[in-house]
Image 1 (cartoon, rainbow, N blue to C red):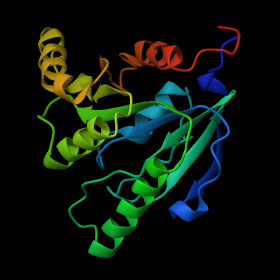
Image 2 (cartoon, rainbow, N blue to C red; image 1 turned 180 degrees about the vertical axis):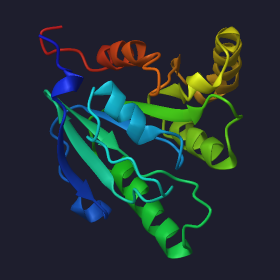
Image 3 (cartoon, rainbow, N blue to C red; image 1 turned 90 degrees about the vertical axis):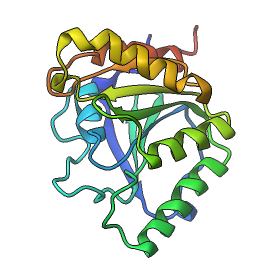
Length: 200
């Protein structure tokens, strides 16, 4: 019996302050990425649901950590970072929230870091990758918006990102498109490897 059945995902709660975060009692699979990288769309496609994660037309609007129950595990959606119009006070709250999450004693099995397949990582992306490397948080990268690439570019883009991300300890690069459902099964299978069933 698989521990992860993404299609049965259910929204649990949102938290805006680290002091509100619940005790970690189940394996956690975390999603991280800058605003407008397509995180909500990817989560919805992974779970085969249209509106599980709210897709906002305004970047930077998801300012909470959202928890989704997936079988015996939890999907954790971190708020998007790097939106230029975010106020300093909001940035400080974001920093406190994120640092508070990672500083807690959580059963964090894997972090899925989202990067736009069409562009080199931004300064904020690099900061996040450096953070993950420093704290030795196990992570893979999901490259988003593959539908904007030509199929002839796929292998080269994955190879370039794989080489770039090696120094940060990235364990795998998966090219995805929420629009075309490309790479979603590979992503799901990879996440499953980090969260096996209790019998395994």
